[in-house]
Structure formats: structure tokens, C-alpha cells
View 1 (cartoon, rainbow, N blue to C red):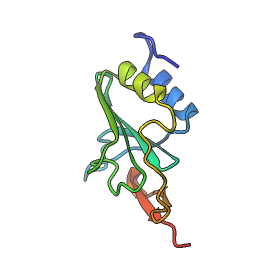
View 2 (cartoon, one colour):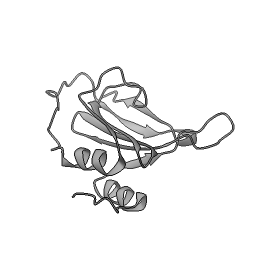
View 3 (cartoon, rainbow, N blue to C red):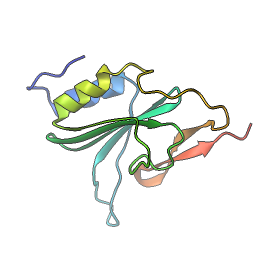
View 4 (tube, helix red, strand yellow):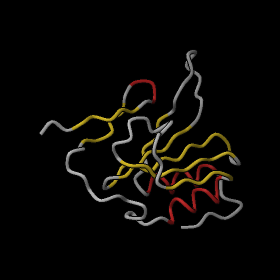
Length: 125
């Protein structure tokens, strides 16, 4: 699933959606969209792609228990640069690449919050 140099933002977003990414749109105090962030939780990792511009994209894979996916303290894999290159690298990762062994004490899921935010909801059972 590679992107050509002529690939549009819409094409890239479509490929990310096909792979299971959900999108949030963090906003400033006035309600203006700051960036577009795609999130895909799978296994015990979370993939995040932040699109600030066609030449300003950041993609990361982080542990699933990371409390702040927009400013993570721990990152397992990361790329920054042009949209097509970064998204190709991210989509080229296998689901288990850089994954850590499953730790049963940290179970839960990301849930959408208000205003394009998401938060980690720990499982209670």
C-alpha cells in the first residue's frame, strides 16, 4: 500500500481509514482545528498519525497504556516528514512490529471524548 508523489490528502486518509484508523480533530480554545490525528489501537500498541500539513506529518507507535497519545512519554517507533513517506512507513509496519509482550494488568481501550479528544478507559474486570 504505497502512496505515489501525486497522492492527495484524501487518498491518504482513505488508506488510513481502510486500515482501521479513527480520527480526532484537536481544537484550540476558540474551537479552531489545530491538526488531524488518526488513531488505531491494536494488540497492546497504539498507532498515531498527526497530519499538520502535507510536508509535516508525524507517525508513532506507542504502548497501549500510554496516557497521552498526543504527547507520549514512551514511543516504540516514530517517523516525521512528508505525508506520503511517513504514512507508507507506518502502513508498512506489521501489527506485531515493535509490540511489547502483553501485560495483563493494564487492560482497557481508548474512547472518544468531547471536542475531538480521546481518553484511556481502564478495564475494571
